[in-house]
Length: 397
Image (cartoon, rainbow, N blue to C red; front, side, top):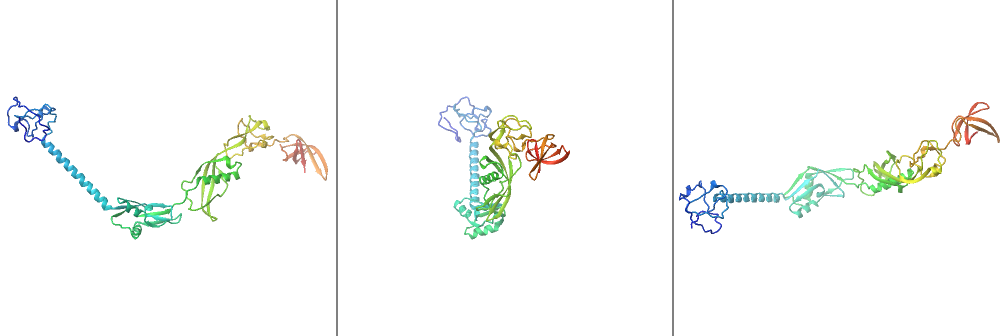
């Protein structure tokens, strides 16, 4: 048995037998084209099969013909180079991070809620040493400005304050904005408090009770801030309805009798209350009776209208327009029926010094009880004004 002396891929001791069919040719002329030989037979591309005298063929060989010793050495060398490059890049990254130490990136604008301003309020502080980063972030660099005013701190000023606080600035990099605009955060409006204030105000100025009003949303509060501390809120004027269920009101923030801020708000309302509705269809000029109406708990469709809340307010009243069954009844759509209509003959009374004189007149206007209308005396054919005192009766005073 013979074995190739320069083979690197002999995996195990496999007995080979000499083949008598292989011609005896020099090693460099065995069809290898200068390749280094292995004792394995390729199986894929027959034109690359390398053979040599005195070498046997292993039937269990499955190695590609191009996988020669030169290729294996090249693969090892390439892998080594890649690992070296990765290691160098890793070390350079580590050196850069350790050289930077800490990075302080200043913000353009900063808002603080407390009186003291810390470095973490005006900058993003980051780095590898967490203890040092915490020490830097907690450095006090000043006090917050008054509410409503803005203070400006430059990068140079912040650097001096941090150094004066005993913090080493070695390997500390200042980045970001060249200066920071600093302001104090106010307190956000309390939606619940404003809603309760609005309901109490509407309960005093409208026909609806506070328990019947629901404030669904309040607008114009997204960018509103109140000064810190206790404040008194009040509506500066009566709320104005700008839609069926929308109200506009002016709100004031007061402290020690001084108005600190005034602004407008809008609110969407829902009112559920007992109101009078028509039990059946009511025609125009029809006088309402108790069976024609009923009180129902329901959503009020239009908060601008004056809906009737008591049956007694409408009984005996005449409708100025028609109503369908179930429709809410508004007080403005009803009036007292006229006791006297234009063209009716009426009794005209005149009282002087306890003496009552009467005559016949003709009404030239409709009139309800207590109304002054114009009549014409039929005896003298003279127009005069008289007050309606009853059905078919007027009096001159």
